[in-house]
Amino acid sequence: MEKDLFDPIKEYFEGFGYVCDGEVNDIDLYMEKGEERVAVELKVTLDFKAFRQAALRQKITDHVFIGTFTPSNMNSREFKEKLYLLKRLGIGLIIVSKRSGRVEIVNEPVVSELSSFQIRNKGKKEALSAEFQRRKAKVNKGGVRHAKLVTGYREEALLVLDALVSLGGSAKTKSIRELSGIEKARNILYGNYYGWFVRQGTGVYGVSDAGYDALEEFEDALYALKRGNKN
Image 1 (tube, rainbow, N blue to C red):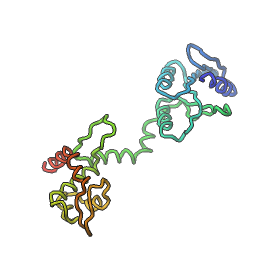
Image 2: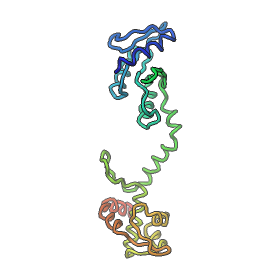
Image 3: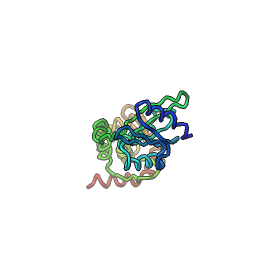
Image 4: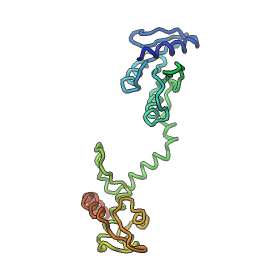
């Protein structure tokens, strides 16, 4: 219950000289210390409603916290993503242990500049652009769940597969590489990530049943790829 968060957080801030009270103009916990005005919204669930309410409190107070119970896994991706949003919004986060009542501030109510996160994620940013540039057909539809994405790697594998079929369904790596135009054809054939190929001998590959199925499944993507290569 949210009321179980009130006393531990109130006592924590009173220990630092704040004067606190509950339900001041609908703010769960309001406090003052000198000229500083602080609001704490108490929430059992750290969800959009909590974020929205806390953000609105920023209009009328100097600092805003959300108070919640200690999550079961603070290293989970979900919690880290929520913490990132709080940092960007400048909303503090206080957690309270259900077992001991221990109070801990895990995020101060200070806005973290986006540039600091971008610097830390520079590699991911570059990888994102690299994957986009690698995709030639760009036939994927956004918002579709559980669909097989036509990634840059899958595009290259499709071109290798198409070249192998054009060579009669059985050919040497060198011939497949030359016809497909994919320099990493050997790695794709050897890795056989999608199970489209069958190794028939040293440097010789054939097409599996899954490979022939893929030609039908990704017909539109392959058409777009081949058309793009001609332009």
